[in-house]
Amino acid sequence: MEWREFHNDLKTLAASIRAAQFVPDMIVAVARGGWIPTRFLSDLLGVKRIASIGLTYTDAARSQLVAYSLPEPIEAKQKLLLVEDCLESGRSLLEAKNILTACGAEIRTAALYTTAQTGFNPDFAVRRYDSPPPMPWE
Image 1 (cartoon, one colour):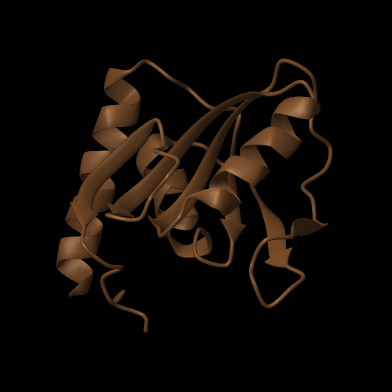
Image 2: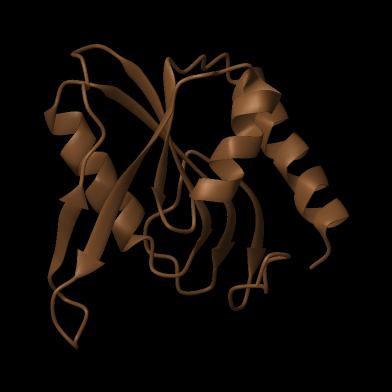
């Protein structure tokens, strides 16, 4: 994937978020894949507050997912856009959503891409692939 295609897909994602009339107070990247899309979406949506949440699997079977870094402060009723680049299973995005929802925030989820294996579909996505595409920074 080239940067031009990636950036065009980000514009499409931002347009669908605006069309849904969702105006986030902050954009939260799911580390690490969400960092670059979050930075671009910050500009495209005019949202200056960005943060990240870090999650990791603690076992080889990838069954235990825990947070190692949380954005603070998260205020009740705050509108957050939670962002990933591509969802394989979608488990990390779902776990991040559950953690931030427990803080009282209103969460919408976004991923540029989903895959055939994605079990949790985000509120906003651009395209579905059979497997994760190579990102321009890889």
